[in-house]
Image (cartoon, rainbow, N blue to C red; front, top):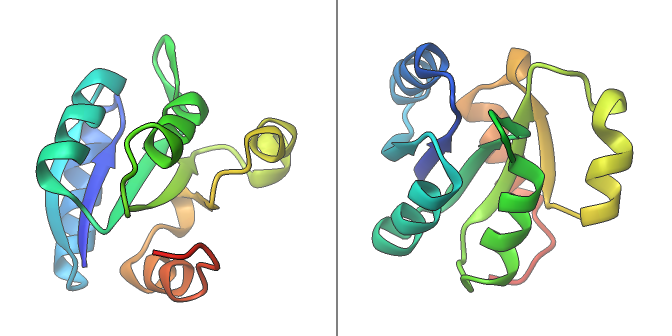
Length: 122
């Protein structure tokens, strides 16, 4: 499974990459901005895009919607955040992204469960 990690925190990107690679996932790339994420999604065609809810001045939720709708990507989009789901539930439900995963629960197993349970046709 190939992942693209999209987050504006360089320390988190490095730590997530190490963790997920140790657990058997391939990190196809990392991005820190929405524009970079869109380019990399198109070029790398990852299976999963992990998108931080808050990308500095940008909205990760808006980016998630663009990845799902505008680019025609087959990637499963998973929003991630340091905040709990209930703190961002209203924003997430308005946009209907595929999944949400707190950063504290980030693991290859959690990502695999989300992908395997993904109802969206691929």
